[in-house]
Image (cartoon, rainbow, N blue to C red):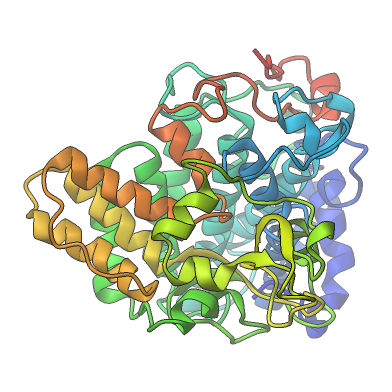
Length: 484
């Protein structure tokens, strides 16, 4: 999915030119795309293979260690409450997340911003090639290319707005989000200095792109985006808005018709995180980042949360009453037994300094081999449908419990056949979600969606990732995050 094919490599030099500064340097502003009309745009996109090269380059941006290869998950977890800050020493880097006081000169999100907008630029180039009929292909091929580009643009915008802006649950109509980029710019447009769109405008564009992508993408597409991936991401976006009706509808469609399965324990717990290479996908994985020898970007993700030697772990799990370690130990089932390390791997008789997770270690204890990175799993769809049904009311309590119990069964936990009442059911679902999706870029966003503090910091705090300095210096209309 996310590796450039060797047969397409000859198009990449042209691809970098056509994308302008977005693909050639991080010293320029990432939002300024050189006008492709000045670079023989039509000649660069006159075959499906050439257009596909741009898509694959965009996938590579999503695969990057500075996006889904690690940095998105790491930053998201540092903003949440799953990690142990006691073990983080000194200042700068991870320590900046204690109070979320970030330096614009060492912004931990600058590479996320860069790679997200690079993926968006590639998506827009592919979309313009399709819309202008610059190449000849059957309609199915054009639909697939356009659908992938729309999915790519949506998922990149979505992650950026969630990390660089206040949550949708605050004031989406007025809170500054990020700058939307939905087309290739002309010379005059590239010179214009535009401000940030509102959070609500960004979400509306993401939903529009995903709705269109779901109608264009095939149900099977090797390791790349599918219509099911678009619908599953839509369910995530709708839940982020507390739009329970649409979230339930999309999640239900994926569950009922997508052909995915939760699997059986213990493989259902570790299997999604132990796949390697193209064509390797566990049955519950809806969309993933593919890594293999020679094209592996997930080493930073593996090394951040896991190490063969416990004293060398970078980010431990939080512990103590009501912590993620405590919750997993009490209610995690095989997720605790299989994914949490409490004794040294090298010497099982010796306790680790703090509990940590091997969720992303890959398929060897030394974490030296590539591993695919799940981005959306079927368990999330069950939990989304369960919460949406419980929140709306009307659905039977047994149906809500059935969804939770399906996830529990896959995790080796006993069924819950007794919880009743809307608030109790919501608490049940949300607790199961915390256990199931820990370290998967979920907890921080759930806290903000539900207007709950994280480590004493309010859900709508302005202490989010700062906009990269190069953008603010180059465009006075881009409002910097206040850090209040």
